[in-house]
Length: 133
Image 1 (cartoon, rainbow, N blue to C red):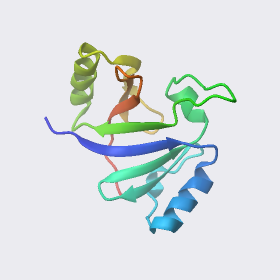
Image 2: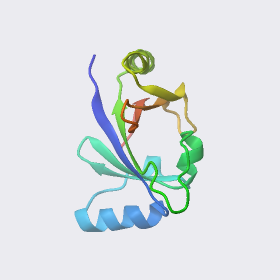
Image 3: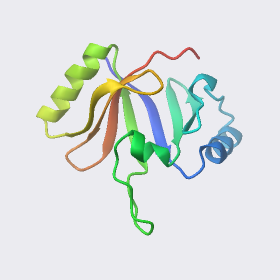
Image 4: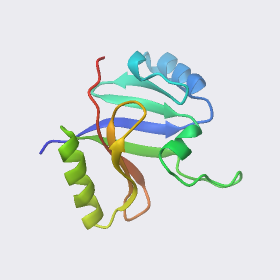
C-alpha cells in the first residue's frame, strides 16, 4: 500500500484572495480543474495547496467555530491508490482511535473520500481522486 500527501488545505474566508496571494508570492500554478465556488488549489510539487471557503465546514461535516473562537482551519489529505484503499485506511485509522466525521463516500467533485479526526482532534482526509493537471 502506498500513500502520498495529495492536498494540504487551509480553511479561509476568501479562496480567490488566498490563491492569488500564494500564487503571487511563490509563483505557483493553479490546478484549474479543481476550481469551484468553494475551493481553489495551487500545484506545489506532488501536493495541491488548497484553499477551502467557509462552505467546507458544511461539506466536510466539521463543527463551525464560534465567531471569536479558533476552529479547524487546516487539514491534511492523504491520497490512496484506489477507492478500496480509502475504505481500508479509514477502517485502520478508526481502529487506531480516529473519529470518522464523514464515512467514505463520493464528493461533489468526484473524489472518494473519508474525513476523520485523529486522537488529538486534528482533522484529515483519506482520498482517491485522479487529477488531470
